[in-house]
Image (cartoon, rainbow over all chains, first blue to last red; front, side, top):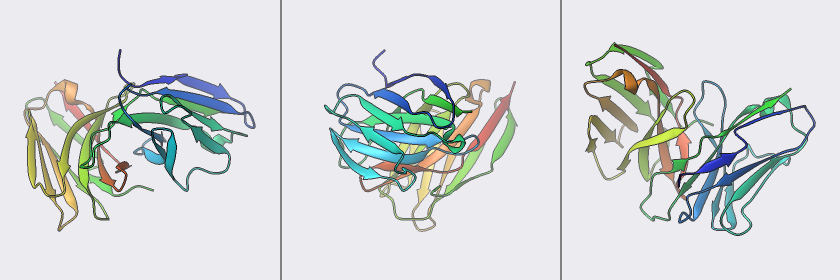
Length: 115
Length: 110
């Protein structure tokens, strides 16, 4: 399967614990995005990479959140000291560079439950 | 924060009928995209319409864009039970981050 993959698919953790999610984009895509989706809502943008450079971060991304894409390939999203409000589906997407805009290809998501 | 809203929030129709969903947004855009999300599956891209286009077709899908009214519509013709899903519009600006609407839940009954 050459689509976007995310691991783990589900994560249950206790409040205060740290969690890390991984995203593997489509190999030739140099743009990578993280979104968060809560029940009944559309996805909300968190952050964006072009190659290894993190070019934009949402105000939703508090100091407890950090994202990396060290070699311009896979990306990780870490949440420190998780809170119950962090419970959501975390979606990763990738796209090729295109000045005129391009569709984004989404992974299946990681569902986080904070107890 | 959400860019805008889809209307209606929920739509229930019979197989074979057409379904129309509307999307309103707030700011200038480069393009507008529609995505489908089935329960248990990820978001799937349906169609992209650029800000200088007014109408676009793809199979049973027809999308219109009115930038003066900051609105778009998605028409699904001859609907099928497999079209049952949530449909989201998403606007792209700047580096192409997507700002999604609140979604329309479509139920197509056999």
